[in-house]
Image (cartoon, rainbow, N blue to C red; front, side, top):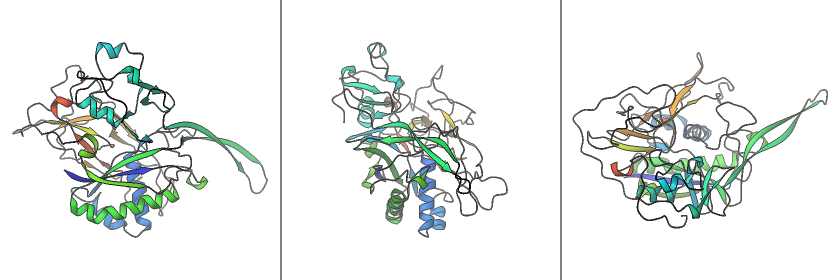
Length: 380
């Protein structure tokens, strides 16, 4: 068990999360863990704690603090990207269901917990909210919609104006984003819990993401809930399998990972291997013993522009990262790394945090297409 903390953000304005393409008429709907780390880092820099924070995270052998990505919630339902090994659910009855399960990008956390416990879905209780790609209780709306806001740029000398549009996320009342902060140990929580809370409060006032000069990205005062991991996500931690004498590694492939392995290996069975469900983006560290030929994962290319007092606007180097919802097979919890993605010749390093915030799964919880058991109760 490790100390953890849930953070809930209730937006008061639209949010702009830039998509991979950079197109202004498109928007991402996940505020990814690397962006969250960068935002917190800039906030801590304004509070005078930059060097100590970097020493405790990107420069440390084991980071003192890790972040999940930010996922939507509405009222009592927290959504998450489910483990790829159990979603969409399998079974002939579900395959013929009126609900297009595979269309759901976000699933209530209670659904994930119940599927991992071996329960099945009752199609009469659930529907897909198309605008948000969330699986919601039948008859209830999703937490957000994407929209287009128009503005006009006015030339101060000539008075000429040019109209332009920007895509954004608009949250309904009672909805927002939540994330998990993981601490390496009690000492790390004692040192960094309060500064991290202060950083979130500052960011809620100043804004997350793009178009902050327009007031976008702001939120009410964040809510914090203390707990332990992985219990905050899936209940009691699973018992890991016996350790192995050795294990083989293969490099992370380019492009997409093993979405549907043709001959999947038993996940976490024997050889000291165990499945790990990612709630963050992930870049493997040299000593991360991940079995890349197994598991179920996808890879995304991350880019973006530098935001620094030493100069902003230059393009960062592109980096491939394993996406949220991926299930990695490894002999130990993946740690991750924070590579320097600064443009060539830039005055200081620019780190992209690829630390893994992962949830260990029991071997029997990570069988692709798990089904069986009683139907799920009402949404949690």
